[in-house]
Image (cartoon, rainbow, N blue to C red; front, side, top):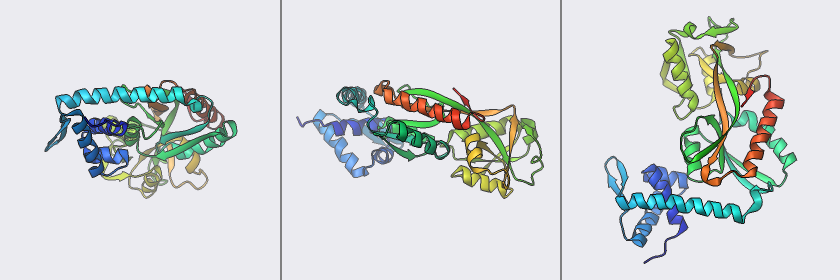
Length: 308
């Protein structure tokens, strides 16, 4: 029997989670042919087919379901062994990979990184942006050690540390009929056009929910790729949108603002937290980074957000 490698096990674990060669290969950062070769080698080593191709995608064979469960257990054990062997996360040295949403990271992390470097100079944080849906998939696949994202994040294999609650304001054009108000009721939005980020972002669900509750209409002919893009579309009179408080604090200058940001009644919030794999346990570095983020939020944004 051929030797089973840890690489084959990792690749199969990702494939069994996505059931798509293309998506699994993208998560792993390899080509589809390379992934296919590794899965074929694993099947040869085990002596059984693990996946079947169907028109609708892949399905796991009975042997594949058993192998997927074993693969997850093996990867958890390997990760636990790494924590025992490597004290780097405990004494705040080494490298951690942090994934973050582009609607959060740019407006918070520069302040956090400055404080982190001063407090823990031997710890390196490698940061990558991505939509929340991709972040959770990449976290499960091991491409991130933890992610900073909007909650909730689904999945029994994740642990969550809640950080803060952030209000969402209603952005309208400077000449819009609502622009002069201090606050806007949901009912005031009836018939208005709303703009949103793509469904890959949790805020999309909040905009859609507001539309359903208020009678506003969610535009399906435009999906913003960033908060900046949404703001610019609003300034051109193409609709309204929701903007988080940290973005407004950072990017919307009141003196020459191209949009007006109004309080909603009742208020809408988003919840932000750190998420990591449950198999990682409770590394002290994760707790300390979470505490540091809360410290920065309290110092710099305490007037606009609420700590969890």
